[in-house]
Length: 360
Image (cartoon, rainbow, N blue to C red; front, side):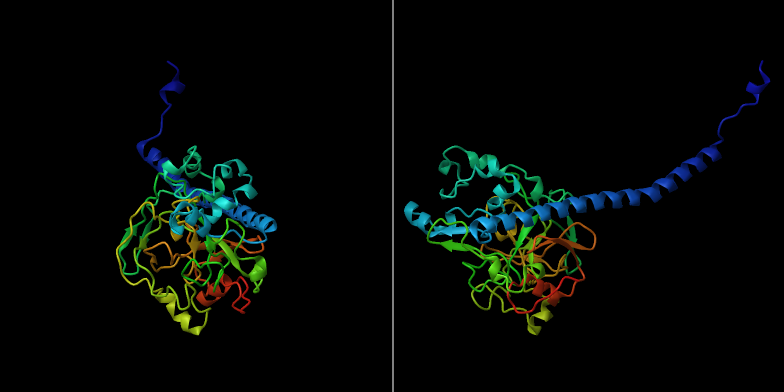
């Protein structure tokens, strides 16, 4: 018998446990770094999406000499078809920029002249059904799985979960700024932010806010921001809904106090899938799929709220640590920390409040 074989020995149990422990420590040290690297990549992808959307707004403006409306209530179409203006096209601003982000074939499925277009009986070819289920990667932040179950701690300390958006629509993470305002205003009347609703007497799609209206400067004004699909909200209207029409008085000292009170008060947690945050990039009916307000801080600790289709108190939110990404009016993209001064944030949302704020 070979003597060398008789003296060979394997790992003892203690040695094996030590090796396993060392491997566990190394994995524990490496895992946060790997996760951080993955989040950095997702954040970069999200930034690229916002950059593309910001440039698409400029291209849209070059063609129509105006920004896309949040939605359109078409009185001519309503009269011709005997329906309510609320049931005319109401197509989301995001759908309107599709041709300017290499999505012309998808946009070709849309018909702005059909009332009740979400009803199959009004669709001559079913193209809207194709469009509303089409996921557009540029409308989605990769840090958000879009399942709507994000956990959040309400102001009273209660742990709540978001509600899943409807499976009948493709979702969106990017939203248009109505500035320090709590409603979707009509035809730019008292409009405080970059975007406004359009109530028209013709089917012109470009009649809304212009870059010339942004007298505070495009490089000093927020245009778009991200939010979390299905984020929790209360089914009530904010008491700050309006002081003049829909518009809130431009940011002054009297509004600085509402950093801890956005007027949402108390109400039931809205779990409707069709009204969930970011439910659809196509249908511009519920503000939860269209807008955010700079009346609320990024990643606000306060509830989002609204109970009807005419106003909204939604904050910019993200699943990126520490803040949110925004597209600025000049086409650039910024990361805004959730600790930003609330009055500065409101000024950055205003297009012509006379307070030319700069990003920190």
